[in-house]
Each structure stands twice: as C-alpha cells, then as structure tokens.
Amino acid sequence: MDRQAKDTPIRLIQLTDTHLSEDSGEQLLGLDTRESLCDVLDLVNAIETNPDHLVVTGDVGGVGEPGSYQCLLDLLAQHLPLPMNWLPGNHDGPADMLTACPSACERVVELGDWLLVLLDTSVAGHVHGHLKARELQSLGATLARYPDRPTLVFMHHHPVPLDIRWLDGTQLDNADELFALLALHKQVKALSWGHVHQEFNGVKDGIQLIASPSTCIQFAPQRDDFCLDKKMPGYRWYDLHSDGRFETGVHRVADKSYGIDYDSSGY
Ligand SMILES: [Fe+2]
Image 1 (cartoon, rainbow, N blue to C red):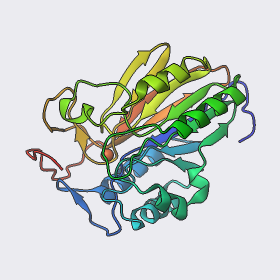
Image 2: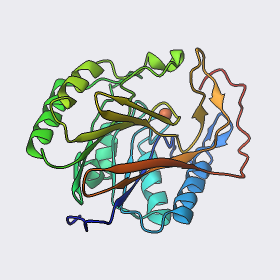
Image 3: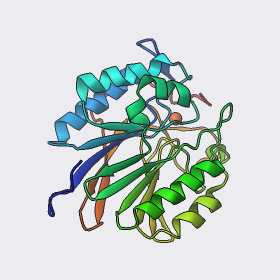
Image 4: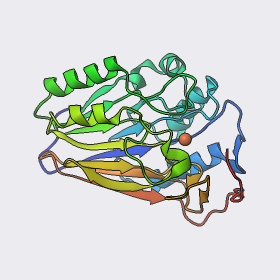
C-alpha cells in the first residue's frame, strides 16, 4: 500500500481462531465454526465501510487439516476479499498454510506509514508457544530496518499470564526474550495475539498488549479450569494514523444462538 494520506487512518481487521475443518458443518462444542465465521464476516461488512487489510492470527484449522486453509480462503474470497496475511497457531500446519497461499505468509507488511510484523510461535506437536532463535533474529533485523515506522507485532500465543490457569501453561515460553528485543525498538506500538479466545487490553513497557475474541467459541476470563464464556464470536479493528497513534476495538455478533455446550469441561 502507498504511503497514506495524512488524516486518513488505515482500517485493519483482525480475525483469529476460526477453527475450521475441511468439511462443512464442523462442530466445536456444539457450534458450527463455519457458520459463526460467516456471521462475523457479515458483521464486518455491515460495520466497516472501507477496510484496508486483514490479519488472521492463527488456529485457522481446528485439527490441522490442510483443507481448512482453502476453506478460509474461499470464505474470504466470497465475503471479505481484502489483502490478507496469516500466521500459524498451535492447531495449524505452517507448511500447509504456505502451500495454500504463499502471499498470505509474508511476515513483514508495509501498510501505509505503518509496519505489520507477523511471528510464528507454533511448536510442532505442542500446544504452548515458543519463538525460535531465528524468528527473534529476523524480528530484530526487521525492526532495525524500519526504525521510523510505527509497528504492530502479531502472533498466536499470549506473552503474559492472564490469570487463566488452564490456559496460561500454554503461553509463549520465552516472552522475556521477546520483550527484551522490543524494548530496543521504540516504534513498536502494540503486541497482539489470539489463542485465548477473549478480549484483553493491557500495557507493558509502553507497548500495548492486545488479545482478540475468536470467531467461534469464547473462553471465560480468569478461571482455573476450562470454562466457556457466553460472549458472542467477534473480530477486532484498528485505525492506524500516520503520526503513530492508533485506536482499536472489538465488535461481536448479536442476536444469535448457536446451541453451544456451555457445560463442557474441555475441547
Ligand atoms: Fe484457538
């Protein structure tokens, strides 16, 4: 995207944790993940007049099926044909994502005056997150190359505990290394993730910390054991200003019942 007009913010949309499968009608604790994603995409189209770009922060697939990536691409082509970048979550296969859409796997995106950096925190065969040394080196090199661009960093796993005992054990396990690196690059405005299926806003060392609701089931905040929240599926938006300011918020589906099994003890 060209450098942006001075007073025109870039509207960025974040979708996360779609948990799709190759087959239509995939149920996750009673919810059809394709149906709820389509409801969220309809919501985006109803609210957003002119969104510029889309990021998808992992768990595209629910069980790692290669066809789940084409499913998302097809739904986006039908409902929200925007430039899009994605990154893998713990349920994803990075190689399958690369095969499905190489351009979406670009990790550094110049968006107007802003820079988006997408990280891979997935660990094959494990649920928790980790940033490999080469991933951190690449991030450091990118931030050194673009010192004057306000930057958003996206990844799948949460880098700080959120007082959710059953889920905090799966957070990024070397977040200290990430925060030490980000502290060297003051242009980083926010660090944003999925994985926790809930909204969160915090701040650490001057960097905004942001989590986004899933497009399917929602996890209840601050619980020791697995517990679903009755909040609806949703998405996050960002308005990125050329002077480095940004606003962000969440919109959720309303007036809908999905038949979710709220008594479930896990998934
Ligand atoms: Fe997820």
